[in-house]
Image (tube, rainbow, N blue to C red; front, side, top):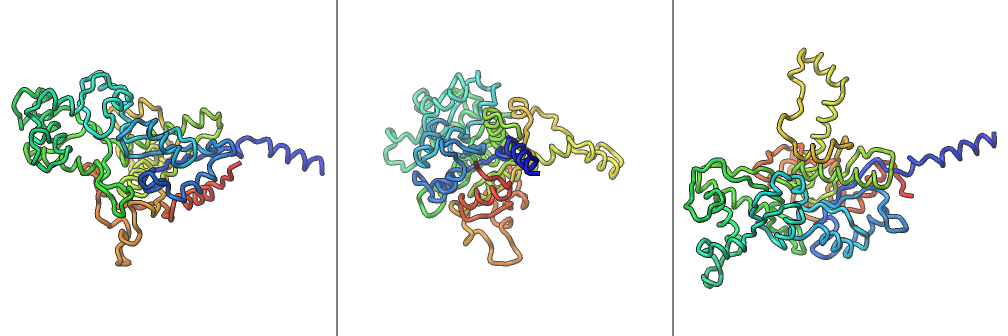
Length: 399
């Protein structure tokens, strides 16, 4: 009996799957890990449970931010320095642009903050024009130039709005007059839809989503038509989460883990981006499983008497699916923390008959309000509580 017991113990200890995670973590950055350049104390506590003695992550981790004002590597280096861990996989709001290869050889105008030319070229774009380059080539178009109009109290973003509208209404030929009935306009790709984000200030600050609100309303006011986007990326776009899932898969392959990563946990502080996005991607994953499951198909056919009622694969070209291959994940659970944009003292209505999902919708125009999508699966105080909860849920003990 003693021999058999030892033999069984040896067999159990030799199983490599016990120390391998079947889940991955998607961390938002601002309001979850840092406030400006200062780390949130709970972040270091959380990472102590996720790295081994060599400082390597024992579970696949991706940092997903809607920031877009620097190169991906720059953000990774900054985060590594602030948090004291080696950060490699960072997704910026513009990272999914790598997948839009059909535009990489086209001439593109890039508007934004930071080293926009370097960012665009790093993403694969070959012929890049910045707003500054346009201002120099067409000086009469920029009537808010501070050198020529020193008394005009306007922000630089007014110039970006003006010149983007000019490009759209002239089909890229700035030497011509506006054609307000031009349809369709040039393809427009937008990164980061955050109306607000959390820095060091006590209250949230305007995000890039505020710029988009201005652009959309100016365009509609002039033309009477809705501005159309070729793609919207950054959270809550499915594009961003699919790209994150792909990077999680890559980490598992690199570490030669045998278990597939089937569960994702997205930790964030913003109901309208982090939670909405995670829940939207979870819905996509669930629908995908339904389509692939013969038993589910059979049940639905039996109930409806028809296959036409079944959810079908989208006929449109899903660039992101073809580029990154199908996901291995089957769920993406949202975890809300209370250290950033979300404030439990102000967000939750006092009326007990209401809940979080009935607060004002700050999401982007093109993302319809669905109460279920802004309801987090879990609410915790901070990121340390989130990690504890996830490890408990997954029954995973880091080695």
